[in-house]
Length: 108
Length: 119
View 1: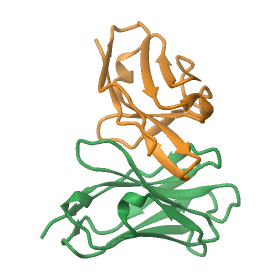
View 2 (view 1 turned 45 degrees about the vertical axis):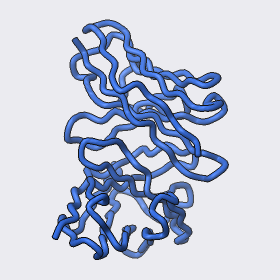
View 3 (view 1 turned 180 degrees about the vertical axis):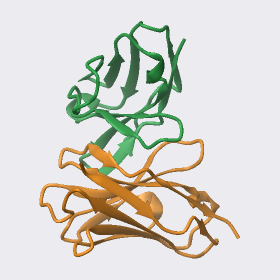
């Protein structure tokens, strides 16, 4: 089965750049989507198809995907960005949708 | 603005069937573009995709459910539903419904509903 690996936690100083990675075999060949989930709330799509922002998502959120690693970058992190972040792909072989284990972002 | 709302019992006994409905407003579930799905999240854990359904009724599921799950659609009510049979405590989770784009991203989510499996 296809596995997605995320760090359990990432910390970033207020106003600095946070990078959250999502590892998977040849993930660069897949569409990667990213979700933000704040405590007690439903997930919100923040990046789709590697590097596209839905309407209403701040420009400080960006994404990249190459080789075996996809990365969500939050530039100028704010206190309100503290949340769990999940990557997601579709495994074309099995037609299943997979989530990474999630990364807790702490803004110091 | 598209909205999704889950509904159903918050407590289910072990070995019984969990039944949830997602009501879609602000858009038609009969659209040929989108898929509709269920995702769950056990307390304190990550997201798990359960399955998707198309407006035609065609559905597919994660194999980890071992054929216990089924998703159906009622276009006349603009709703789709999840049934999970023979539930155990491991099925206790917040259940979300969501709209899925053809490229895989889930762009609209319901608020989620907690289902507890307990006698």
